[in-house]
View 1: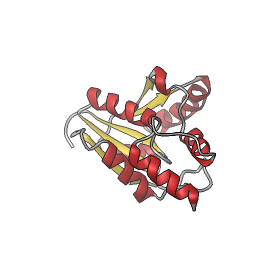
View 2: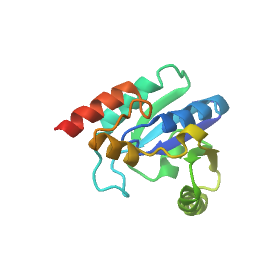
View 3: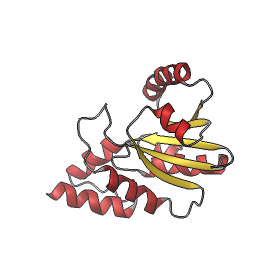
View 4: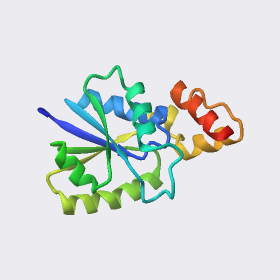
Length: 163
């Protein structure tokens, strides 16, 4: 890849409109954005959707962004970034709790890969409350998630929960 490359990592279980907002904004700043889907996140025991399903949701939702690609990874984030020639890791921040967690990760990543910058994008106001966990909880109890996730994700989530 040529130009300025950034990684937007996450579990994306499932991808939300908040995630897509951050990815889209990163795509305006960087020449290439690689959405890194964590295969099996350490912070979560089990994902609701497989890595392949999560990749499919993101690919569909970002199909209009020519400079965005999606890839699964199961190694250190900084190694994944190096593999893609990335000079930046882009993360969204919603609240102080996000900052505290991301600050700690940033320090570890800088120690491992000082050549890769972490870039934080503040969540847009309409998504400042939005999380994949919250979306799954709302869907579990029959709430409307239509304006929180892409339509394909909403349908898949309803189907998965009904099982």
